Amino acid sequence: MAAHTPLHYDLDDLSPSARIRQAALELFAEKGARGTSLRQVAQRAAVSLGALSHYYPSKAALEDSVRDFVSTQVARAVVDDAMAATPLEEADRRRDAFHMFLRDHPVIAGYIRHELLQGGAAGARALQRHLRSTRVHMDRLSAAGYLRPLPDPEMGRVVYQMMSLIPFLFGDSISEATGIDLSTPEGMQRWRNAELDILSRGIIPNDREATAGRRKKNPSKRRG
Image 1: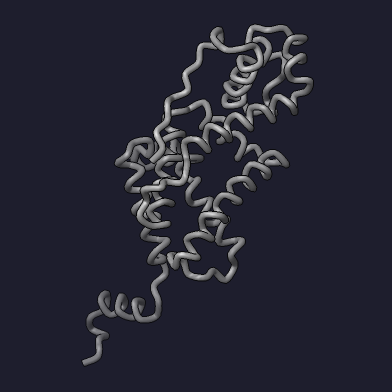
Image 2: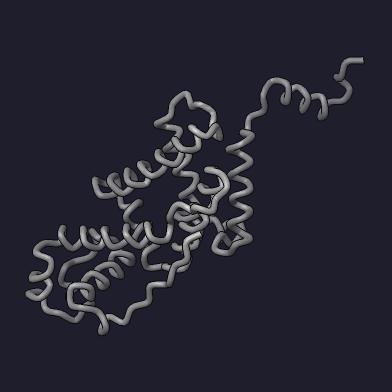
């Protein structure tokens, strides 16, 4: 699994352009890009609007820079594990690395959360990036024989991706509602065990299992 170093910055130690980008990242994580003005970014970075415009001529340019920075950091943390024995183990390790990275980098986690939930074109583009990655890895698992053919591959990928994002997007609410802290390794393991059980075995029994279950509940109806 890839090792990664938490990204803790003192804005004063960064170059002007990096300081502006980091200030924008922090504000986007707090308020979302749509809720953040360039003036607020300039104030957080302790630069003038003119200086900000010198490095980032438009808000779109600044958003692109933040997005590219986040994508690079995630890619460095979540890399193909050459030591994985199987594609299934590799996928498992990649998911672990992704969740560990987000746990260790709450600002980046907040940014990605806002990006995915904000809706509109920006939210759709963010989800499309995740779905492209999911498609690559599901195709590799399918080619290795770990996944059965799906009747609707496109929607199957969406459902699979959303299941993997639920603890990240709604972990705090789940923890508060259930008392199961998904920010801990133990809590995440419980989630993953339940997720794997549903994915591998399903939740609706087949006809034989359903008949056996009904007989177990109603022993008087068993055949003699």
